[in-house]
Amino acid sequence: MARKLRRARSYIKNVLPDMMPKRLFPRTLIIIAAPLVLLQSILAFVSMERHWQLVTARLSEVAAKDIAALVEIHQSKPYHQRNRTIAIKAARTLGFTLDFLDNKQFPPTPPRPMFDILDSIFRDAINLNIKHPHWVDTQARDKLVEIRIKLDRDMARLFVKRKQVYASNSHIFLVWMVGSSFILLLIAVLFLRNQIRPILQLSEAAERFGKGLPPLREIHPHGALEIRQASQAFLLMRDRIERHVEQRTTMLAGVSHDLRTILTRFKLELALTQDSPEIEAMRKDVDEMQDMISAYMDFAKGEGNEQTEPTDIDKLLTEIADEMIRSHKSIDLQTHLKGIDLPLRRAAFKRAVTNLVANAARYATTVKLSSALTDKQLLIEVDDDGPGIPSDKRNEVFQPFVRLDNARTQYEGASTGLGLSIARDIVHSHGGEIILQDSALGGLKATIVLPL
Image 1 (spheres, rainbow, N blue to C red):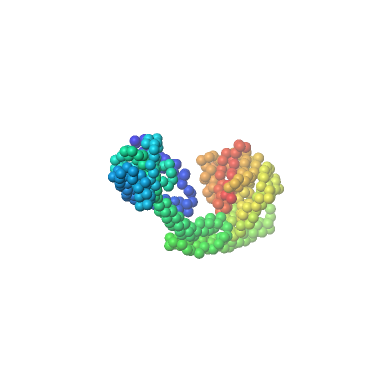
Image 2: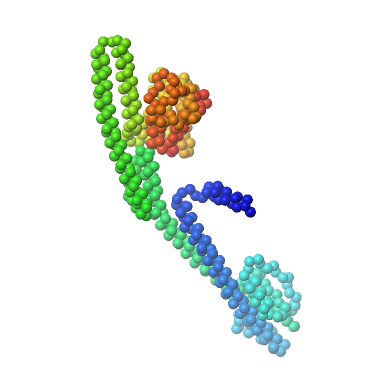
């Protein structure tokens, strides 16, 4: 018993959730429809069973007593007046069809149906009221019930209309029950759809805002109070985020301008100074500082105010490969996405892929850039044969300013530690993810996964 209970709990916990629909509308519809159907089924069963049993029992009792009365009248009449007189009275007053057979043997007993209320109730009524040997068939004819009664000299055969012994109008109740349930369910679906629509609009707006896409339609809070509150909270949050990004971008633009002005003055003063090993070292420091400030600004600004536009992925990857080749970096490009345009912030996405490719080229001699398209995802893979990154450190390299003490950062010319952070932020803003794995080339494989 305990094993069966554990198995049932395991089934409910593991199997049943997978069978349930995943969307809110069908789940809510099941919550509404399932109790309605169950309640209607119980009411229908109880009502129809009582209706059939009570009404059929009364009708069967009346029909059996009428037949018993005919038998008594038949037995009380002289033999030469019996058959014709009784047959006329049965047809005229009771609606029965009565005749008498020469063959006094009963036919084979028909099989009794397993779940037939008429058969059991009517047979019980006949057995209670008819004391003569009798035979009953409720199945051979659709609209008639046949009863044969063995009398002293005759075999009486009666045909009784089924509606006289059976509550045959129960289908009307079923029609009303099913029809009313369907109408109520249809009304529930219409009201439920109106309640679900603002949730879907809010979900769509949040997803597009997270990806930096313009909204397809402006949100107007409507629906239930909780949904309106959620919509208003989202609109306030969106306005605060946009205002914060705008203020931060403006501030960073001013800081960048001031710092670049100072660096330009430094470079001018160094250019006018007589060359020496110390001056050359200072020039390198100024150039490195300028590169660091540019990297910091790129990380802080992210993708900026760039708008989404249809982007040819094949052309974009080809541009990145050509730029790497012009920088004297070897790269193997394998892409089969010609003519496929996806909505992206082109410059930002190009910077993300370029960061991954440049990071691989900095530490490896062979870099392969490839792409693939599935039904639901765009995959861009960057493989290299470099030293790689330990699996327990791969999450850390995405943190800003993190530079590992081993592996790739041992190489000369290591960056500020912002390249992967910038790339991941840009990919996240497009709704995707960057996955680091071991490469078939022996180094690291970085995969950009974008949902379509």
